[in-house]
Length: 399
Image 1 (tube, rainbow, N blue to C red):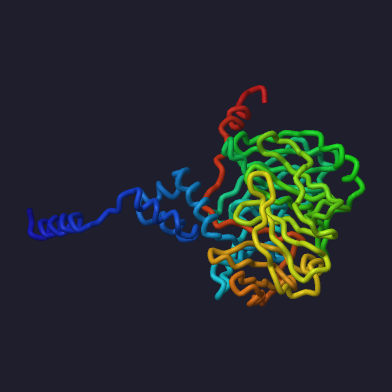
Image 2: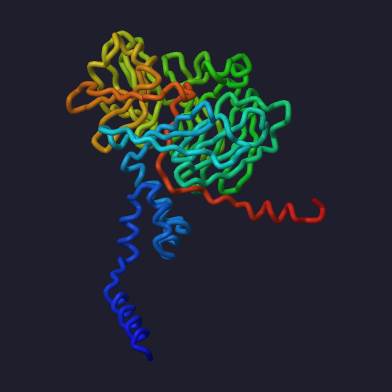
């Protein structure tokens, strides 16, 4: 053996000796706390890292759950050009903006219908039966084709929602039209059509779609584990009054129902707004004439009082609910609201019992602002669709 070859062999053995490899369980616990954008880069480190990040369903689910615990929510903003930007709120001293472009050209400029757990549902206005489910963090998408839609029924649904069925480990999409609703299951990769509730059959045909200055947008439901919620007033929205009817979709039974659970309050004239906190349904509001509001949260199918927000920056509670929308809370329990302007965010500090700071979006004229603020979890998880069954069916001679 030549001296050069011998030297190379010795050096190679030294490198192998000095190389330190972390056990898989320790590496798992470290990587599961990393942001998705970094994980996508880390796939190039080695084959074992790529296998853990790309092909390990247990890891992607753990990453999703860890992001929920850490409160890694981001606000989805859509530009008039069709591009998307996401604003992170985990660092309150500096608002981090991330730019994304949807990969499919045929869905450029599509409407954002709803979002949940890092998944975003989009629909192009005149693509009457084609929807797309997208995870902007992991850059994965899947096209959904609803066979129940007809060419003349290409208008947007009256209401929509996304939720997670914990009993079957399945994400579900619900689209509510005037006389029926359809449910899509990611685990079965199929749609189901059902007649809607009698109260919705009576009211929906005469209700107008929620609209803003640029486009019509269907009412986004409040998605939680196993349920999607709406409040039925003069339209399907998120405001809860004494005369309101709370409608919800049960992911376990695929049925729309009227909720018998009312918010416990002794206030005579109250107004609440539905939202989510840490994956749970919440309602914030109170006496319309009082300068302050309460936040209630749903636990074990009943409302539990969470906190009182004092010194709100409006004259009364009703004025606050019309101009501010609850987005999320951070690890330090700061409460973030979108408002009072469309391009501003207000932060409430419970320890100081006051709103301390307001953050503004500098280039706000470039965005299309929706009536409902779609938030998105920074998650690597994307459902595994059962597409093999459809491929086999399409390959049969009869078809």
